[in-house]
Each structure stands twice: as C-alpha cells, then as structure tokens.
Image (cartoon, rainbow, N blue to C red; front, side, top):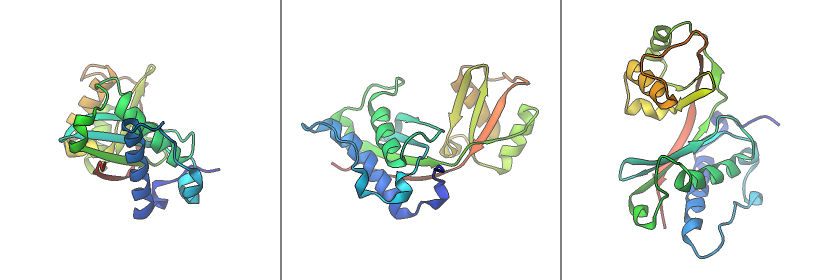
Length: 196
C-alpha cells in the first residue's frame, strides 16, 4: 500500500482533514469521551497511510505543531492524533485551554515523501533554497530539525531559514558537518479558524 501523495488530494478532501483536526480538539472540551474518526465515513485516499503536521496558532502566535514525516497509519487517523498532540502534548507550550479557542487557527499540512538533497556545504544548500522554497529536514549525529515550507513566510532569506533550523536542532548557528544529511519535501496545506 503506497503512502498518499499530497498532489492526490483535492480541496474537499483537505477540508475533511481540517474538520477531523477540529473535531479532535473539540473532543477534549466536551463531556463525552473523545472519539476517533469513523473510518467508514472517508474515501479511499484519506484511508491510505499519510504523513502530516498539524499547526495551531492563537491570535497569530504559535501554540503547537507536531507531526511525522513517515506514514504509519491512515491519513485521517494521523491528522486526528497529531491535532490532539499539538493541542495538548507539544512540550514547548502549555496545553490549549478553552479561553484560547476564540483566537485558534488550525492548519493541516500533508507531506510529500522527503527526498535526499545532495549538497556538500551550507552555501550549496543556501544556493539551492534561493529558488526552491521547500520544507527542509537537517539531521546529523542523532539530532534533527524540520521546518515546513510555511516557515518561509516568516524567514524569507535562506541564510536565516537555515540558521534558525540549526538552532531548533540544538546546534549553534554556524554549525555544519560533512555528515549533515539534508532532505526536502513539499506540502499541501489547509487552514481555518476553529469552530465550536
């Protein structure tokens, strides 16, 4: 069974995924036990394994962002699980509370399969990124960090993008290693305000 490619998803399917993410968060604030999505309600594409990230912002400020680059389970389940994790398990933030829901925006990003990028230096990577505003994964020595392509909106210069990505991984801003592994990917994303 092949993993879903983001190019195969239409607007209606992305909207369904956004609703799944909203429902996962909503379930936490209801008196009923949170329920996973009913798989029989979704089409074949959303039931294929898929990798995704769910990003939460409150009044424009990041509130949680968790996901995976490897497709483990049906995309609809991944979105449900990552929405809950982003809301309540991202250790960088306090868990989401009811008072934040008015300003909450939910974004679902479905990832393509990450591809290895053969670059022999940081400058070569920067040169590549000048014309390719893609998602990037840097990894070296059991440390890794990822930026979704949406981060380019806040960090439009490749030098700043890579510097911040290295800091996120726990390296200093000038760190580079001959064994550094670079992977790139793209996403299809949809975002919308949270609805009660």
